[in-house]
Length: 194
Image (spheres, rainbow, N blue to C red):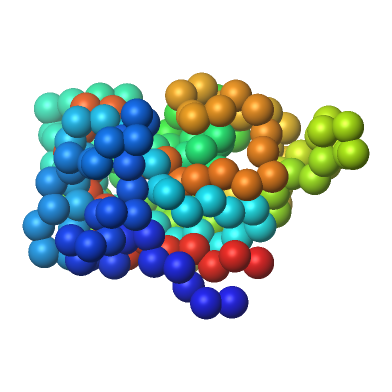
């Protein structure tokens, strides 16, 4: 399948995103990078089963800690938050650290690079399956690589996480990038529908 670029660095690709209310986004765009400012952004493109690629860079915030240090999130299908955080050096990450499915699963290992270095997520999603009456037959499953290291291996997303665009599992949904008040930068975001 062909890659669908949600953000390729061009000004035109900013049009692939909206704010929660559907208005144009207001994130900072410099070169091939966009940086969090003023609200979550949501892709216009939706997807079911997919390979999702996201690159991000943490700001250097040495005086901060925990959830105040480079916090953002990648919401798979707008429903499940994959935590983005400066968790570099944490020996035993929990379900709120970088690479966690927030409030559900800690990453298997801490694969974080130091702040100011680019990092990658490669997310392999098997979307939920539904019965004819609309009830969930099989929950979504996901395998995630951070910086080419497997941090989540075929885990079941048995519920949504807080803060997404929906509190229900969906057959198709968008990608949401979270504004949590920290200047996290993103580039080279694409999906392959599978």
